[in-house]
Length: 79
Length: 481
Image 1 (spheres, each protein chain N blue to C red):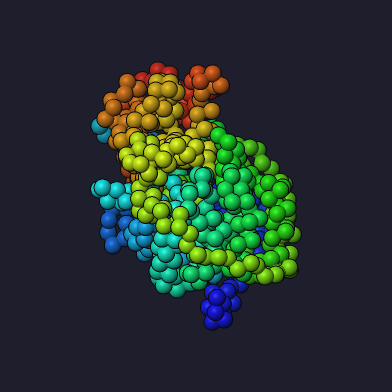
Image 2: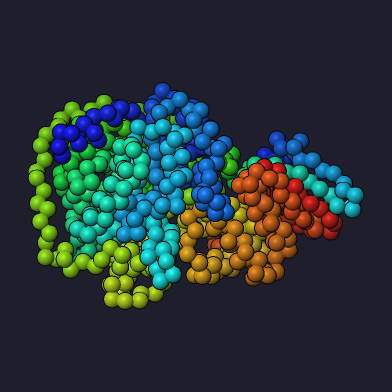
């Protein structure tokens, strides 16, 4: 989310609609930067389709899990 | 191989050199290694978008292909969704998109896996969730040859098949690894993409020793080799593409690559997530590429004859199951269905089946958290790790794997919604993540309603935190493509 704060906040447009609904406009690409865990920016391309060739362990879930679950399996909050 | 077929399949291929499998997030390495990376291997299916059935169920993501084409290196195309080892034949629904991908990338040759990815079921073919090893029988040789010839005819380009890893024990009466590959290559009159790390896995996991396998291959048909690193898991060495090439395998390559007279490319495979997770440095990757250039330099320098293999069908081979029964058994077991017949019961005792079950689960879990990152975190932070794992297990037990990540994630969103979990704002976060996918797929703005200020909620989850108390209100997030 640091990326959104630093780079994309200018792109977020807020407006008050007539029925008191606040609208926030967010580029879809911003979602794919919403990750304090990643040291490099993940890329939106190649993520909606098939998995690339890999006949081994897919590490993505482990990385997410390690981000919020400690070694004693306690969920922890960052920040 | 006749002189004519040698000219047709081997002669025209250009020597491309050392390269890598392309991932968008590896582009910094492609920049840093511009002089070392001479060819890019493109796996097209990750850059396809599944769409409502029109004339073709898949369309190419134009942005991805445009970005790939900007790289000056020649491209070769390596399919990851139309394996040629299936009794069901080629997946025709993918052919049009595959041909369009080839049209965009203009490869000198095309390759696919000698594996199966769909299995025959009572309600029709279903996705197995992983590239699985075919039974190494004469019948599989025949069907693979048929599939390859059909692929070649559709492509109008030289075709090579890739050997996969096999984490199972050899079945009684199966053809040895090398003979199985050799027969297919010779009878289909095609090239071989020899994945040396996959042979290394088989060797370490107790299948045919790699030297024996290599000695029985028609090495003049090897156009390309794949090299990668792996990891150990439950006593098996996995082809995880998770690091640099093991030193012992590199030494073996320096012994065998000189015996490959028609080698045209050496491709290094590494998954970007592992580069981050293991802290593999740019320098280490560049040094790896330099080593592969040294390997490339010695290609074909020491070619000799090879022993003629005895292709007689052994009596045991006749007792092997039919390929379709094998596919049904293995796909069912790796998706954790209980054994339903004698073949499945016998196969279930193989420790390799347990490994494959975990690999399928890891892929399915990876797809979900990759596209539903914030929803996963919100659920885990509220419900705990075990509860989320139980939800995913329940989902997997009720559904077969969907190979396209966006489809799998979308279906999981529907499953979670109907659970009506006591997690504040979960429905909104799920809708937001779904909208982000839809905006990219459709190119259209998608509106999501929120009952609280959305940015503090999304930002907190992005940091791995719960948002705290948020004031109620009426908000809309317009997700723009």
